[in-house]
Structures are given as structure tokens and as C-alpha cells.
Length: 140
Image 1 (spheres, rainbow, N blue to C red):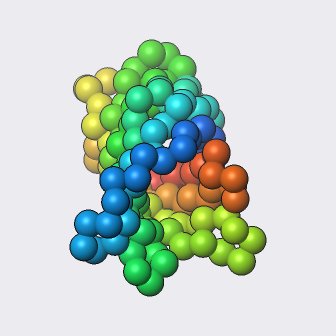
Image 2: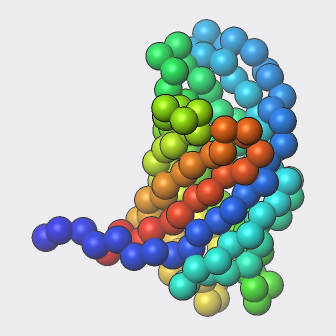
């Protein structure tokens, strides 16, 4: 059986300049604050709340390990906690591109299905490092 991907939402996330924690033995740890953003799509729409962050690790080989945690507020006022780990690499244009495996925490109700599926995501930042474009897909 071949998995099918269904688009759940696209996110446009505004980020701030990173705080450099420093070299921690396995790479360079930075904390990148999330300023907020927009969520649109066939299954979820709303906004990314300010206050989340990506605690990324840049490895010696240039690969980046993503560990982002933030909150989405849906158009109907439901809060969805997102944990979005993944990997990324800089492409030839200076942008960072990657793949993620978002996980969701949400109270019982209209979005409880987010707890019952596996999801994958795509990620791309602009070269200026001010915006991140994400797409989340449900694996069926």
C-alpha cells in the first residue's frame, strides 16, 4: 500500500534574529524566536502566535537539526500546540530547505484528529532569514 499525502495547511512564519547559545560539542546551538505568522489551508486556518522558538543545531557538516515549538490559534479560537522537529540544509540560492515531522497537541473537539495521524512537512526560509514557509501534509 502506497501512502497518500493530503495538504493540511501552509504556514508563513515570521522569525527574529537568533540568539546564539554557542558551540555545544555536537554543533552550534541557536534559539530563533518566532514573532508570529499566518496559517491557511484546506483543513486548518488561523495564525501562529508569537512566543514560540526553534532551537536549531547547525552541525559541522552544514546540516541543521530543527526543533521548533510554537502554538497555532485556529480561525475558530482553538489552540494547537506544535512540536516540529526536522532537518534542513542550505541550497545554492542561500535559502534553507528541509523536511519536518510535525506533532500536535490539542484538546478534544474539532481538531482532535491531529492527534491521530502521522504528518510530514516541508520548510523553506528566505536568504535574509526573516520568514519561514512551511507546508504540513497528513499521511494516509
